[in-house]
Image (tube, rainbow, N blue to C red; front, top):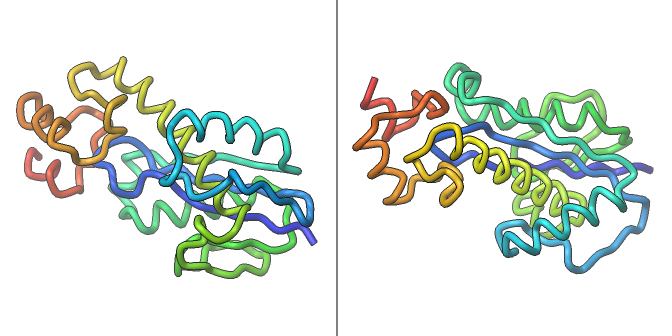
Length: 183
């Protein structure tokens, strides 16, 4: 049976997309280095992303942008990204990080803190985080002054100061507290 793991990155930031990834490994696959992306250094995530892409039977990454997040809300946008990521891999069963089922046709199980428990979900969390972090570096160059490459859009003091001094960028989530006050 082919089992996919799916997770997202970027629910908490004030800017940029939410990104989901799905990963299917060969049955019985084990790599003790693959764990929750939040517990790994950026360098280690980068290294593991290459190993995951090499070892996976299939993988996908999907981003749902800031405009759609503002239309749907962050929960619905996250679930949409995860369902789209799963639809791009071949799997018989899906393990979903968290407690919310996603809109797919194949059987699934939700696992709270699955990114710390299941290798497929851990791998998906790594791919999603690495892809999103790379995008935020690109957006940092496109919108200088917000320091996206330093905080990836999360609401740090540095980020809040930039928003106060410059106003929101075109990629900020307009419905999020800390941004909507500028509308």
